[in-house]
Amino acid sequence: MDMNPIQKNKSAKTASKLVRRAKSKKRKCIATNDVQVAETPSEFSFAIAKIAVAQICRSTGFKTSKYNALEILTNVSTRYLETMVRSAASFANASNRTDSNLFDLINGIHDLSSVQGFPGGSLMHKGNLLRSSALKDIMNFANLSNKVPFANPIPVRNVSDATSSSTCLFDQETKSHIPTWLPHFPKENCDQVLIKERKCGEKLWEQSLAREENSVILQSNDINGKEEKETRMELPKKREKMKFKIGGEEKQVGLGVNMMNGVYKGRKRVSWNNHKIYCMVEENEEEKR
Amino acid sequence: MNHNPQSSEGRHDDDAALSDFLASLMDYTPTIPDELVEHYLAKSGFQCPDVRLTRLVAVATQKFVAEVAGDALQHCKARQATIPKDKRDKQQKDKRLVLTMEDLSKALREYGVNLRHQEYFADSPSTGMDPATRDE
Image (cartoon, rainbow over all chains, first blue to last red):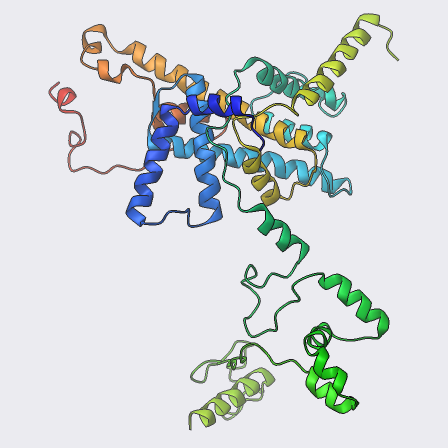
């Protein structure tokens, strides 16, 4: 958000009692936890929303607020926003679009303001959406209410980091779901390298990367077999073994096999499902030995 | 289509007003910051590169919050007005406008949100009450 210096001064002045109160509350929480940052992104966004809601409350005339009340109002308003936007997105999807437009948003606004009712609500689907009175109300509100800009500009994470992570799609540190033993993703211009290599001949990307790194060695190597061996990349970390345990002891699993009928004779399991589990349990026991 | 010249003029005015409003959203700074709205937009699957729509969402939400807060303020003022005059001095401290759960729940009920206090269990009916009111 680009704010000119005048607005900044103004916003500094309008740092209201409510906001300060909210902040002090936040500080208290932080002091008790000894953590300087919000623990989750949702907490962070909620804290920001709380400040904004507090500012709005102050602009309507409240001097102070109970902590719970402010929190609930923030909760309701964020839900309101999300619901409105979600219904707008669903309107867009229903008409085979991924990007929403003004009409979808107006429909979303209608959805939420129909609880209260608005003039022309009965002819909602006949009239022109752009002439909806719900939208007009919002226009009037925006024109008539006094504008209170947000108290403090939100600190944005380093922009260069964000752009670099977007250009190189695979930043290992940001992706927590990728196991650590997998080889690192190529750092820069990964897609370009890939395309070039593909055109020359089908090759896996780790081979191409390894070739770049070992290019000096590869030039001296003439034999293809050796080259292939060298290009096999070592994993950065040894992959840990995976074990699956299915029940420490024998368990009779469903499928009605434990009924004393033809299938279940003389304590011998005929069901394939149980047979499988039985075998695996035996294997487990062997391992234990 | 428009047989009535007045209505067509009115429509033109409406369209002009709408386009003016949308244009003015470019320079408008809502109380709810753009970054916050964009976070919630992304969370809900709303894709739109237009900043004006983001601002419109922010303004709509701001209007909702302002309306709820305004209703709560009216409830608050009405509640304070019902206090008899002899007691008003005693509760002069409470004259400040405070957003309380009581008023907020009344205000939100009109918007379809049912808000309840937590159940309060006490040994006797007078346990949690103000000592001043307990004497009566």
